[in-house]
Every structure is written in C-alpha cells, then in structure tokens.
Image 1 (cartoon, rainbow, N blue to C red):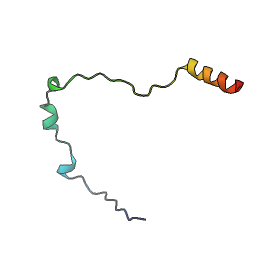
Image 2 (tube, rainbow, N blue to C red):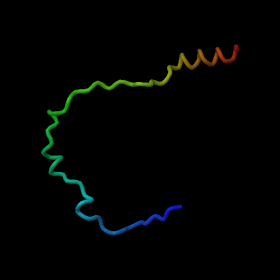
Image 3 (cartoon, rainbow, N blue to C red):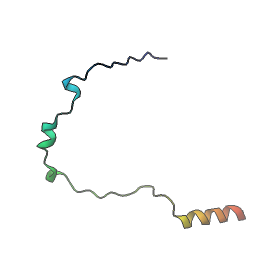
Image 4 (cartoon, rainbow, N blue to C red):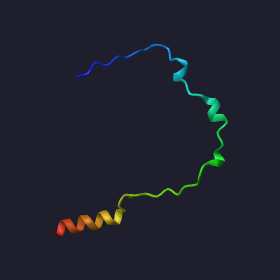
Length: 57
C-alpha cells in the first residue's frame, strides 16, 4: 500500500483558476457539433419483447 499525504494548507495562487482567460474567450470561434448517442438505451417496448421471448424459450 502507498502512503498518501493530505495537506490542509491554504491554496497557492497557481491553484486558483485564471479568470482573465475565461473573460476574454471568444465563443464564436468554436465549431458547431452534432451530438449523437452511440449506445442509446432500449425502449420500453424492446424490453417487453425481450422478456416475452425469454419466458417462452
């Protein structure tokens, strides 16, 4: 097992986010993307069909 050190000291400046970059960020330069589900969940009807086929097998 490894030894872990937990420090509860005050955060230093490098730990804090730099909001200057966020404020000057240009959202219009982002590309539009289309989100697609790769593995959608089965519908209720599909689940019922599988249950029926399992019970008859």
